[in-house]
Image (cartoon, rainbow, N blue to C red; front, side, top):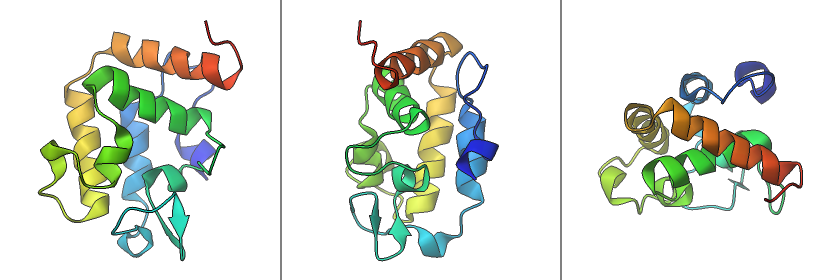
Length: 129
């Protein structure tokens, strides 16, 4: 399902709007309301919905993490765990993720997104330099 909604094939970078559309489709009842490690008791965090597991990132999850890191100088897990000051006032995890994605979209350039995407690709395909 993720791969049909979020395209990472033949694109200069993954669109933030693709992430927004994907997360909007997930019912609130599946979102974890407290910090977890991707999945717990059929509840997920945003990276878990995208297929990330312990020691098993995907290009889509690594790219999103890099968008936050290189574009906003934020750690995505701080947003997910509700310890990122800019979003702490939003208790609902789905709304917090969507709000942070809109913030990401408004405060990053295409160049930053492109560079973050290619860094993620290099790491995922084993080329670290």
